[in-house]
Image (tube, rainbow, N blue to C red):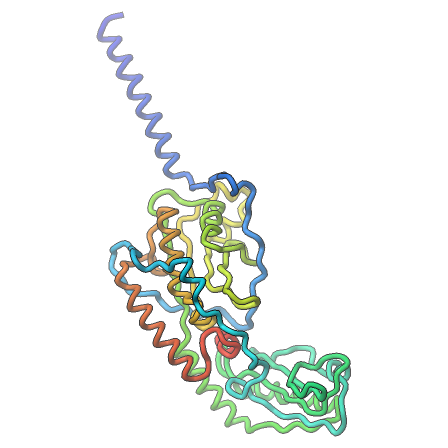
Length: 367
């Protein structure tokens, strides 16, 4: 074998090695990142959480910002965990049930005492008038408190109510008429007399409230997009769990719980539901996730926007992602402060109308 032939063999072997190495590098780069089986993480799956349900159609979304193509940086904006412990926790509201601020209320006076069992038997089969929540409350003779009829209790006064507006829209004449029919049927069943307000006045009030709600409804959504390699669902869940997220009721949805029991989640994290339900999730590729905050559903004392920024920074660093608006445009850090200032104004406006973010009334109106 001549030197020339030996050189060709060596060169061919080197080219083959380079091609194999390049293919291996490309395959590894394009393979979705998987959850690492670290100590303490083995076999750990986010606990299933039953999320609070709200009546109404899909939530309206507001663009997070119009931004340039610079990448986000969050230096100096994270919330320290020790500071978060000192944040004021919203106290549970005593004001609940029907409220004249957001409900049409019709008093119903019975001719004699009505048992809770009889009232329950007289309730309509559905608790809606069209797309609006409908409710009947009774004044408990023992506690002198308005409540939904309870077995074993006694009542002589009732009130029927229907919500003036929600995210579906304002109460209309057809829905008001259905409310009157249901309340009248209940009153007839317990031998009582209802007193209904003027329909045109209430419908006008509903439109006014709906206009206010439309002008002050906001949901912030940010996209975290992979820089290079995609993520597997398990990789997303593992990193989100380190930030406090748990699995929601819908595949591809994780939630960060608020501080109070029974309250809506503070933040939600969503990704492709098809990837979450795949037969082999670890082979599914997720290239972006959405972080969302429903402003009206979370009390301002929770500082949810600061928490959103902190979570976004942690996930962007851990997962090698770029924070973008919901259209995929990268967000610079300078866009965050104006958003925070606008949110404070929004909170103040809701407070001034007795519809503070996170309150029972706000959660009902913005649902």
